[in-house]
Image (cartoon, rainbow, N blue to C red; front, top):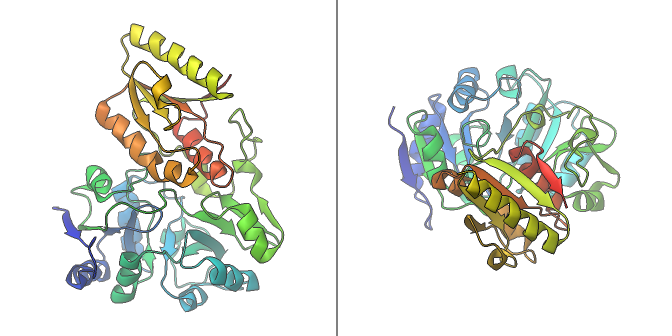
Length: 353
């Protein structure tokens, strides 16, 4: 299979490419497309075979549900049962945007799309290409991140091509994504709204809309990078994700101690014949003396850190580093989401100094 790349990064959107991608979806094929979070690998959410193709292309565990992308709130009503009033409140506040709601499903969405669950995860992406594709195709689009399962999520079309070339029909290239971290997932099937995956929409933002909000104890990390030991409710949070090829370790603590520790570990690794990568911020980059030093962003701009995280991990793969040492990024608003991804990429390997 030859994977075609179609450039839809300029305005107005090339609607011929959107129509061609829509034809692929309606015929049961797969198309990768940009959202504001990461690139998604899309198939018709109501087509069992299309969902099976998504799992096969990614090498994704079959019990890990796919998120259904819609363009209108009425589509959520079409595929759900017992939809709570909080869904409309959250949609009014955050859709289109990086919020996924888990609700009870009806028979419209097959179990092949939901990983065998009686619930379905749904969001309305805030990206003109994604919305145009949903509307033009007439499909609700099932779309996990468009990468090989376990690899860093794709924030550019080139990342998708690297992982999935020859496995899918087409990629809509909309340029680099905006946010760079996957959506916040909230469970609306219980009495209290529960965060199953942290993201750009944080707990404080949710509480302003619906009042009481709790977080799944299985995804709560302490300052040493370990959880409460509870099993995450969202199946996707039980798997290793986002991992670069190099062995990643996170060092946390006061800045001077972190810098000196990373410098020491980098020197020791180089003496062992290993190629070293270091993830720094713009404030600390000049303090490191050895290894491949990549700047993830500025600590005063946490969105820059989120935006660049996956791209940095993929750059280290291109540099073929053996080990990676990273600072910790416990920023005020997106810190939980950033560290959730970074800790999973490191396999919870952390050092407190």
